[in-house]
Image (cartoon, rainbow, N blue to C red; front, side):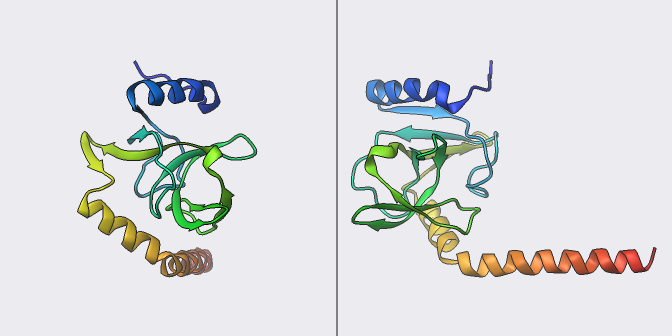
Length: 157
């Protein structure tokens, strides 16, 4: 039986499970980590974080506003971490170790498990993170093309 539960309600259980068994698996919601994680479809396994985190790891952390987030480390700074979702272009600065609950060790899509230390996964994230500027311009270009298309369709109606 699958049941949707708010993260703030299960975080104490997630923390307890990580301390007890070393890991916990759940289905995250949201599109910020797309295409790696699909909203409400894929599962992630979170393990206890070993500090300092390394660039490209994906921690589960709590923001100062209480929101729980899975985003990728894009930079390690002396006073914290810089995070960004794979489907986002804005960095989030100043995430501290105290805010981090655990780190994604693997994820499952369509009954296939992908480990975060596999060579194919490492290739994916290095390409994905290092093409962020190109993807940003591509998104702007796609939006512009869509507006032009809609105007042309209106003219010929």
